[in-house]
Image 1 (cartoon, one colour):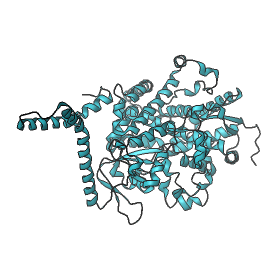
Image 2 (image 1 turned 30 degrees about the vertical axis):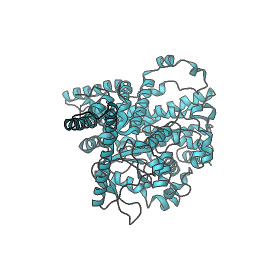
Image 3 (image 1 turned 90 degrees about the vertical axis):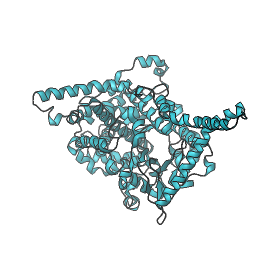
Image 4 (image 1 turned 45 degrees about the vertical axis):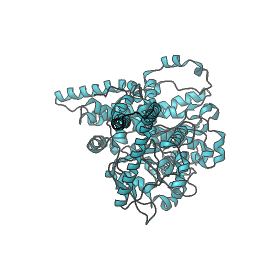
Length: 604
């Protein structure tokens, strides 16, 4: 009935009883009072004050009642409540100071700092009340293991997540639970078999085009935004894999650094000149950013969208591309069925063709395609961006990786799946990048009943988790914990995945490394991401022998503040700012210069 209204209006209508009940109760109480007292002893300002105080009084009663119930339920289950930060860490009502810190961190700070500060005062798992609602926050492997595997049935994405992500991901595999999630996963899984994900011709075409455009830019004497290049590479590869033809973002010109004369053009002029593929990418990015803002504000996000559904508006350009493609796919399938023939040849079947065999509902198809497109573009682009960023900062590791590539594949040949199996150092570099810069740094589940989590220390009581508690977990923070990874946890060292440190830290506790999640919802495209990233890196380093970060090309607003150097650790060595929407990325691009490899390589 109200689905066409903006989210903020729907939010207020849904909560109208809670808004009306406190002043109505005051009115009823005053009416009873005046029925027994003939004279009106209450002045106007006192009555007004009673109406105003009815809201905080009702909130206090509700919170007090909830606190009592939680203590009773925890005692019945032989558990303890979640630890909370000291009052003076955030004395503001509703955790506003912590929320402000998270927002400021997303704008100007360093990702994970707010959580790491709480980790030292409360431990790796704690309760943070935002707008008076409990939020479990954790970087504890045993608790993340419970969410994803051992207590999988107790923790779901939840209706809150579905509502938050709906404009971007709809009812797709990443935003749903139960039978619908199982359906989406079952129809998607067959397309990620080894036979499907080891056909590298798609990668080869788009990698060649990406490298060609970078070479042209370097010859002009300018740096290239590598993050932009690999985002185009993964988007074009993903759309060809999904639909059979790419969206063509690599055919558009690459951007120039901020000081180039092209940036003097007005915004209106530059927007008018945009191609459809450029507008598609921009809308895609802006929809994800708007969705991530929703997540930060929890249940209260609709109050930011009183006029319109912001992610939905951003997605209009994306849907304008997807909807005709999906309709054409459905029509092809219907025509083929009328002719009593298979829709397409098995070998040339796209993901869309495969999905249409299971459903012809255009909304379900669009939702699933969007989920796969987000996963297929953003996570791999993030991995490639931060891998090459690390190679630019560690020339010795770059030389060692090139040596492996040239000895296994050579300077020109297209790599194969079997080549990647032999390239242990390449996989170690990817894993070390995934450890320090996981593409999905934060994730969330929601308890669907009263349950418990295992104690962190042996012998302690389990931790009570009330039903419908939002549970935020950060693999970004977990992957950087020195108590889990050793004293050199903040050092980029791929050898940790090859030497005795594997057996010391990772083998006895595999849940300390979760770049692709785990359990029943483990990423179906894990091997696809490894293959695509490996392929691009091989092609890149067959063509380039040196990689250098171009600090002068990095926009001033994206450069780390001088104060970071005094804080030590990896933060002191960062040359870029980290940002995150649904995935991790570099603020305003990763600007690099590269030196072309010589025609004859000495691989010794």
